[in-house]
Image 1 (cartoon, helix red, strand yellow):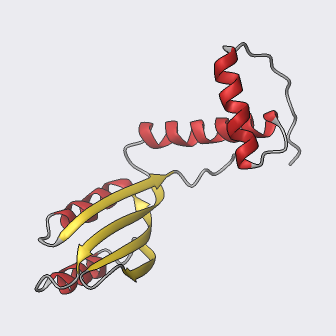
Image 2 (tube, one colour):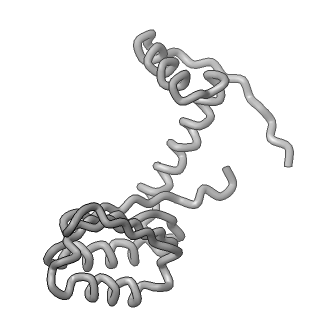
Image 3 (cartoon, one colour):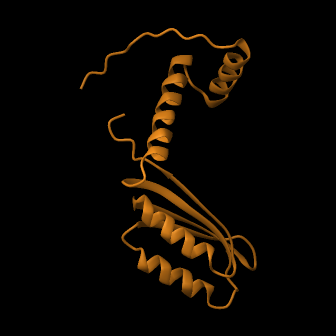
Length: 140
Protein backbone atom coordinates (compact mmCIF):
# COMPACT_ATOMS: atom_id res chain seq x y z
CA UNK A 1 0.00 0.00 0.00
CA UNK A 2 1.53 3.27 -1.12
CA UNK A 3 1.07 6.21 1.19
CA UNK A 4 0.86 9.58 -0.52
CA UNK A 5 2.64 12.43 1.21
CA UNK A 6 0.76 15.69 1.43
CA UNK A 7 2.39 19.06 1.98
CA UNK A 8 0.70 21.41 4.41
CA UNK A 9 1.47 24.83 5.79
CA UNK A 10 0.86 25.80 9.39
CA UNK A 11 1.37 28.92 11.44
CA UNK A 12 2.81 28.63 14.95
CA UNK A 13 4.06 31.08 17.52
CA UNK A 14 7.88 31.17 17.42
CA UNK A 15 8.24 30.06 21.07
CA UNK A 16 6.13 26.94 20.41
CA UNK A 17 8.10 26.03 17.30
CA UNK A 18 11.42 26.68 19.07
CA UNK A 19 10.46 24.38 21.94
CA UNK A 20 9.23 21.70 19.50
CA UNK A 21 12.53 21.88 17.59
CA UNK A 22 14.47 21.47 20.86
CA UNK A 23 12.48 18.39 21.79
CA UNK A 24 12.69 16.69 18.39
CA UNK A 25 16.47 17.25 18.40
CA UNK A 26 16.74 15.72 21.89
CA UNK A 27 14.64 12.76 20.80
CA UNK A 28 16.77 12.22 17.70
CA UNK A 29 14.26 12.89 14.94
CA UNK A 30 15.89 13.42 11.56
CA UNK A 31 13.46 16.18 10.58
CA UNK A 32 10.70 18.41 11.81
CA UNK A 33 8.29 16.53 9.53
CA UNK A 34 9.12 13.24 11.23
CA UNK A 35 8.39 14.79 14.62
CA UNK A 36 5.11 16.26 13.41
CA UNK A 37 4.01 12.92 11.90
CA UNK A 38 4.76 11.18 15.19
CA UNK A 39 2.88 13.88 17.12
CA UNK A 40 -0.16 13.54 14.87
CA UNK A 41 -0.16 9.73 15.28
CA UNK A 42 -0.05 10.17 19.07
CA UNK A 43 -2.83 12.74 18.91
CA UNK A 44 -5.04 10.35 16.93
CA UNK A 45 -4.37 7.47 19.32
CA UNK A 46 -5.12 9.68 22.36
CA UNK A 47 -8.34 10.88 20.75
CA UNK A 48 -9.43 7.31 20.00
CA UNK A 49 -8.67 6.27 23.57
CA UNK A 50 -10.69 9.11 25.05
CA UNK A 51 -13.59 8.75 22.60
CA UNK A 52 -14.17 5.03 22.75
CA UNK A 53 -15.78 3.61 25.86
CA UNK A 54 -15.50 0.04 24.65
CA UNK A 55 -13.21 -1.84 22.37
CA UNK A 56 -9.87 -3.51 22.15
CA UNK A 57 -7.13 -1.84 24.20
CA UNK A 58 -3.56 -2.62 25.08
CA UNK A 59 -1.82 -1.30 28.15
CA UNK A 60 0.01 -1.69 31.39
CA UNK A 61 -1.05 -1.90 34.98
CA UNK A 62 1.77 -0.75 37.23
CA UNK A 63 1.52 -1.40 40.92
CA UNK A 64 3.71 -1.03 43.97
CA UNK A 65 2.78 -3.08 46.99
CA UNK A 66 4.04 -4.29 50.33
CA UNK A 67 4.65 -8.00 49.75
CA UNK A 68 4.89 -8.64 53.51
CA UNK A 69 1.25 -7.55 53.98
CA UNK A 70 -0.47 -10.70 55.18
CA UNK A 71 -2.42 -12.42 52.38
CA UNK A 72 -1.80 -9.68 49.80
CA UNK A 73 0.30 -11.71 47.39
CA UNK A 74 -2.35 -14.44 47.35
CA UNK A 75 -5.13 -11.90 46.77
CA UNK A 76 -3.23 -10.30 43.89
CA UNK A 77 -2.55 -13.72 42.39
CA UNK A 78 -6.26 -14.61 42.64
CA UNK A 79 -7.23 -11.37 40.86
CA UNK A 80 -4.67 -12.00 38.13
CA UNK A 81 -6.02 -15.53 37.65
CA UNK A 82 -9.60 -14.21 37.49
CA UNK A 83 -8.51 -11.88 34.66
CA UNK A 84 -6.04 -14.23 32.96
CA UNK A 85 -7.72 -13.67 29.59
CA UNK A 86 -6.61 -10.01 29.76
CA UNK A 87 -3.05 -10.58 30.92
CA UNK A 88 -0.36 -11.08 28.29
CA UNK A 89 2.66 -10.98 30.59
CA UNK A 90 3.96 -9.54 33.85
CA UNK A 91 7.23 -8.43 35.38
CA UNK A 92 7.87 -8.58 39.12
CA UNK A 93 10.74 -6.67 40.75
CA UNK A 94 11.75 -6.55 44.42
CA UNK A 95 12.40 -2.89 45.26
CA UNK A 96 13.53 -3.41 48.85
CA UNK A 97 12.80 -5.61 51.89
CA UNK A 98 9.06 -4.93 51.77
CA UNK A 99 8.13 -3.33 48.46
CA UNK A 100 7.60 -4.89 45.06
CA UNK A 101 6.92 -3.39 41.66
CA UNK A 102 4.76 -5.31 39.25
CA UNK A 103 4.03 -4.34 35.67
CA UNK A 104 1.25 -6.29 34.00
CA UNK A 105 0.78 -6.12 30.22
CA UNK A 106 -2.90 -6.31 29.30
CA UNK A 107 -5.04 -6.52 26.20
CA UNK A 108 -8.81 -6.59 26.03
CA UNK A 109 -11.96 -4.57 26.70
CA UNK A 110 -11.40 -1.22 28.40
CA UNK A 111 -14.18 -1.87 30.93
CA UNK A 112 -12.39 -5.02 32.09
CA UNK A 113 -9.22 -3.00 32.72
CA UNK A 114 -11.15 -0.68 34.98
CA UNK A 115 -12.50 -3.63 36.96
CA UNK A 116 -9.15 -5.32 37.58
CA UNK A 117 -7.50 -2.02 38.59
CA UNK A 118 -10.28 -1.15 41.03
CA UNK A 119 -9.98 -4.56 42.69
CA UNK A 120 -6.22 -4.14 43.07
CA UNK A 121 -6.56 -0.60 44.44
CA UNK A 122 -8.94 -1.81 47.14
CA UNK A 123 -6.43 -4.22 48.67
CA UNK A 124 -4.65 -3.29 51.89
CA UNK A 125 -0.92 -3.04 51.24
CA UNK A 126 -1.22 -1.86 47.64
CA UNK A 127 0.48 1.53 47.62
CA UNK A 128 0.13 2.62 44.03
CA UNK A 129 -1.75 1.45 40.95
CA UNK A 130 -1.62 3.13 37.57
CA UNK A 131 -3.39 2.02 34.42
CA UNK A 132 -2.04 3.21 31.09
CA UNK A 133 -3.90 2.19 27.97
CA UNK A 134 -3.89 2.99 24.30
CA UNK A 135 -5.55 1.90 21.11
CA UNK A 136 -3.57 -0.76 19.22
CA UNK A 137 -3.38 1.94 16.49
CA UNK A 138 -4.42 -0.21 13.56
CA UNK A 139 -4.37 1.45 10.17
CA UNK A 140 -1.97 4.24 11.04
